[in-house]
Length: 117
Image (cartoon, rainbow, N blue to C red; front, side):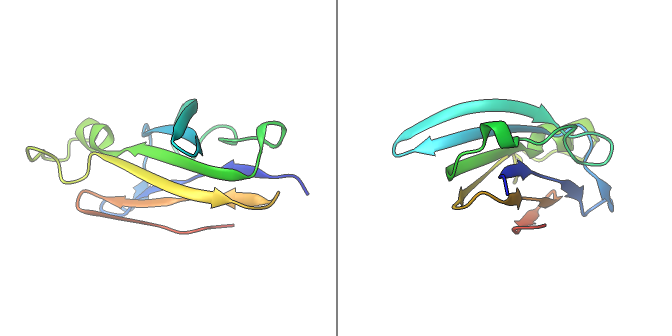
């Protein structure tokens, strides 16, 4: 089996996928944080392709950075200054070559994640 990484963002406050949310992917190696790519969610709250496809997959520590504040601004969520949730970093490890699905359930004042399938 080959490894790859996907995500899905759901707006739990509105009960729908979070379309247009920018996500950055980083690889973490000790104190080094290497930016690998930037993607944006589609109308289903997913990315159009795997964030980290099999041909680029390596085990290790990664970080997905979800730009929640910009998304909340774009959909018209009343702003507070500063926003309670602006940028959400999720750091996680991938220890074997398999499918890693790291979804984000988002609202203006909370979020959760888990290893999905």
